[in-house]
Structures are given as structure tokens and as C-alpha cells.
Length: 360
Image (tube, rainbow, N blue to C red; front, side, top):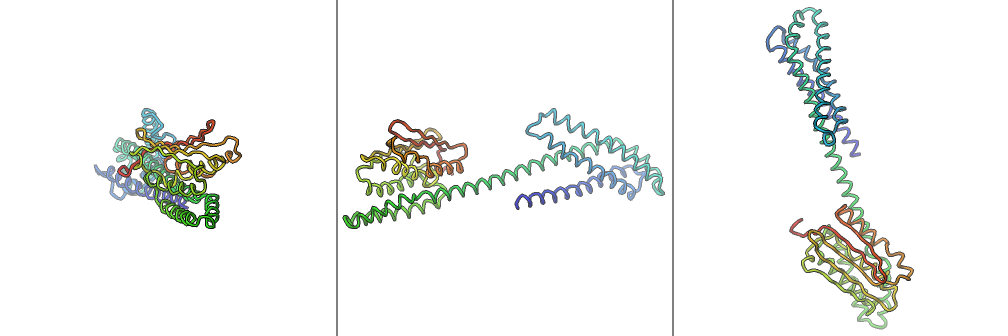
């Protein structure tokens, strides 16, 4: 629908320019023909209307020349050669056809001597036609640039909408149903053997869900807020896994102010727990690293894992794919994701521009 509206607007704009150009050039030609006398204002105006109409048709062909010789991909010498040559040829034929029209008019009553006036103004007409064609070329290049700018804005808007859709899809997938299911089962089991811990886990889960929804409404958050969310997530998982889950954080103090999309690291940490630690009877470790290297923010989530575990094959699941999509939607080619598996370690590394609140 937007494309149709843009096309209709372009057509209306072209029609307006056509008739506006016709009127403008008619007045210019009238002024040239009457500048030294020898022709009445009425006759000069009628003749100029005919000549201007032909000039509009020839000038309209400038659109084809401009499309076949785009400014950003055509050498300057080729641009000059193309448009100057075309202007000279079209102006020559325009003046010659004008002389035929003048000869026709002169045979009518009241038009005596118009051929003499036309012949006297031939040089001025050549100049007027030549520069009017070049003016048409300039206008068409401006119109092409404006159209390209509008299309770029439209693509940016569509990209923004797709980015928003990706964000919403990612946020819906952040709260893993298995995580909720396991947490609720753990709470149910604790109610009979340790009501105090069951109540504590309910509070932690409620805080986690509330914080998740709050962060999801923001386009960017400081890394510190994401770390606070991860602490709540780890507190819940420790109730289930106890000493089997060891979490380490190596965070540079300066990067805690860096901005990133909300809930970016939580699904990676959840993957590390579900597909790594949960598959190892003796438990394991999860390590989160964050540092700044110049204008880049480097984040790493790695965990111990059992290469023989079947669920490891599902490691590159919805959570990781959504993280990659969100980075692409927000930063385009400025963000990178790398996944590595070593002997007993699984690592996901993220590299994105280091933004801070002051810079946004």
C-alpha cells in the first residue's frame, strides 16, 4: 500500500513538473521572441506554447539518460559527453522543427514576418533549448536521489519492524518452559521436606519473572542490570542443583555501564545449565567473561559439558538462534557470534559495539 502511494505521488509530481516546466519555458520563450519587437505578444505567446510543448517532450527523455548514466557509477567525462551531446542533438532538431511550425504560421493572416523574427532569435533559442535540457537532467538526477532516499527510508522502516518482531520472538522464547516446569516441580517437592526453601524459591522465581518482563520493555540496558537478572536465575537453579552448579564471573568493572539488548545473556546461561550441567551427574561450572577491547564489547559464556550427552546435540537451539537474530537486528554486521566446542568446554562468544549511556 505504501509503495502504491509513493508511485501515485511520483506520478503527480511528474505531471506537476511537466506542466510547470511547460508554463515556465513558454514565458521564457515569449520574452525572448518579443525582446526586439517584430512580433506581437499574442503571436509570440502562441508560438512559444508550441515550442515549449516540444521542449517538454525532448526534456522528458532526460529521465532515460539519467537512469542509464547514474551519478555514482558513471565517470565525469562520460556524464558530460552523454548529456552535452544529447542536449546539442535534441536542441538542433527542436529548433529545426520550430522553423517548420513558424513557416506554417506565416502563411496565416496576421503572422507576416514571423520567420524573420524567428531567424534573428535562432542563436538565443539554441542556447535556451540547450540549457533547458541540462536543467531537466539536473531535475531528474534530483528526483532519482529523492526516490532512492525514500526507498532507503522505507527499507530502514521495514528493517526496524523486522527487528522488533525478532525482539518479540526472542523475548517470548527467553522463559524456557522446561525451566519453569523444573522450577515448579522443585518447589512442589520442597514444600513437603523444606517449606522454607520452597517459599524462598517461589520468591526468587517471582522476582525473576517480574524483572524479565521489566527489562523486556527496554531497547537497551546496562550490562549490570543483565548481571542482576543472571544472579536471580542462578539462585533459582542452585536450589535445584545445589553444589553441582558452580558459576564464575570475570567482569571488568568498566564494562558494567556498557549497553546491550535486554535478556541477551540469560538464554545462553540457561543453555549452559540445561544442556551442560544438567547432563553431568557430578555437576560442572559455568563461566561468564566480559571485557572491553577498544570500541568492542566482548562477552563469553562457557561451560563444562559431556561430549557423550545426547542433549548436547540440541545445544544450538532456539535460545542461541534468537540471540544471533537479535544481534543482527540491532547491530547488523557490526556484531559477531562465535560458537566453539573443545574437549570438555562449550563456548559462545559475542562481539558487539561498546555503547554507553553517554553515547546514546
